[in-house]
Image 1: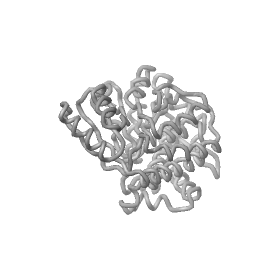
Image 2: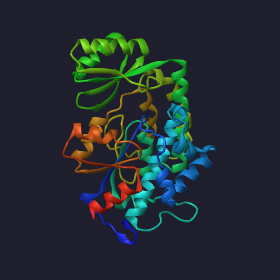
Image 3: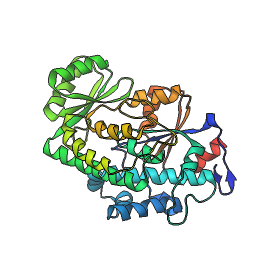
Length: 338
């Protein structure tokens, strides 16, 4: 059930991990490069991704350029692939032997059940967490994320919008402002941190009204579209067709949906939620609280960045979150839980 080299790391039920996966915006040039150089488990994921996508996604992750990596159509599959590669390395090192079988060197159902207890991700991180919980194959998950990024980018081009982070203002007041100007609450990230979304001029007006109402800060975000708003409805409708062709199984560990912050096992509900997520709010704070309420105290943020670790401190500072993205970080984490 785990180890470095031939030394196994065994986790009892109470110590099994919560897997949390980042969303769009976590990308950075060089992500996964060191993992690819050091681990066959990472190489299989990146090489298979290049084959599935028909383009060199690893070169984009490792070298950029930044203006290409940060686009919605590129950043979503790039973050997804990097996160799954990181998880594959973590599983292999905890297992103490190669994962998968020759030609398909990726974690198995038994591998995930041995070390994981719950999986969830913020927005883009949700399909990643479904692959991690073995509800969707890696290849299908990658094809879905590729189309997700493409359709969201197309919707953003047709109906330009913005998002803004409102800090330190009551949710009810923010909702009143959004209703008044015609935009939406998009993300409930942590106590006192709410993201709004919609047409650019409406979001800018709502941000000004929020500051006038006592918000500590109202920051217009550097994103390419009004995600998790009605402006993503065209992308949602196209994505439904993609989802109809994807096999979804029951997750082998608890999977918590962004849409309702509940453990979701039914494949058809998962399919519906993946589409509805695009134009509805992301309930990250409640999702994380639900995982904690189920007794999961140790989490690994798998993939680039450490945004989720920062949010976790604001939600419940008793939860332990370790961000993992390099072999050194993975090795140090495994040593710490022996």
